[in-house]
Image (cartoon, rainbow, N blue to C red; front, side, top):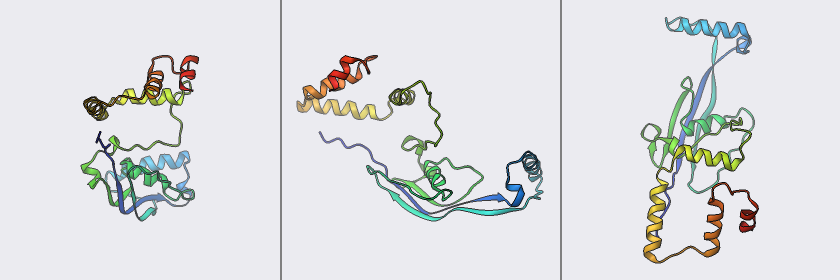
Length: 195
């Protein structure tokens, strides 16, 4: 019926990310070091810096394109900057990091675009409720986020199908109704209908 879903192309060019890192025994997360770090943070307000830090390059001149509707695999050894790259693409980098280069979504820079509407960074830690299934977790998340722009697309699709005299296939319609019935997602009748 002539409806195309919106797509997003992500480009990153000459992306470099650097951080300041403590040197030697100060790099260890011990209680005295944490106390010293807090004290130095307070002294930095007055322009006093005493700690020895070195520049740590996390990413250096990285460029690439993530095409729409394609699966992209990011491989690399530990501590090679994979997570930092993904956080940069999602616009969730720590403000203490120095970032150079450009990241764009469909030609718009990050300051002109809201990446949270089209991309997400999901950490490696499990933060969902253990008593919910994956399907229940995704359903809950979708309900919290709302329908967004997809509602307009689905309404337009239904209108165009009705105008063109297109009706769903009986088996497909039965499948969709069986999976959409409230509270019967895992019942024996629904399982039989899906088979």
